Image (tube, rainbow, N blue to C red; front, side):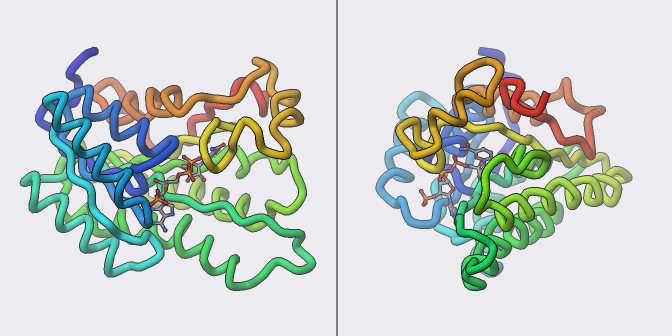
Length: 247
Ligand code: NDP
């Protein structure tokens, strides 16, 4: 594997499981020192840190709830202090709560906005204080911002639409500093959030022209591209990776 990210420091918000863990592993394999946050999975986080360290990489697990602005700012400061700089922020932490709009609990509405939207903004705001020319901010949105294929997901889809719009705005603000801001929009991808034995799994597969869901490693590959030197001219973009789901 190319060591495209040698000497770079990355922070992945929500890096213990699924897409986030695949991103942590991929960025580390490309030579980056990688800090990552988690909300609850302390054991999984320690295991991932140990695995990367054992294979010669540098990793740091940090507990920080993305819904807590102080914790998010603390995680950014800790990552930058520990590794001495910060070049790449990946906003992956996200939650999915589903219910028909008629009785969608407002606590769930607020919690999803806090984690999926506000937490992402707070992390970016804190991270750019440490970034120089060539900095990268990459958010994991969702194809749900484009296509709402199932009922009960109005609020989740709204949060991901907000991510796509916010990324375009932040890209303009940060362009003069040479920092790029992009949004990766996965289609259905096999993780705890979207398990292959879930209630809609067969229906989802039938809606994807390539006849399978995505793998976390495939999403991580697109993130690695955006983090790397070849993507220097990509900013304000939403890149889709969905097996043709929205074609
Ligand atoms: P998972 O539920 O499998 O993993 C979520 C990760 O985010 C975990 O590492 C989790 O940490 C962390 N996390 C969750 N809540 C918080 C929080 N409050 N603070 C900090 N970390 C948190 O999700 P996926 O890997 O499937 O999803 C990752 C991202 O991709 C999300 O933004 C999701 O919306 C998006 N996405 C997923 C798709 C899919 O089909 N799977 C499709 C499109 C987009 P912990 O282990 O501690 O809980």
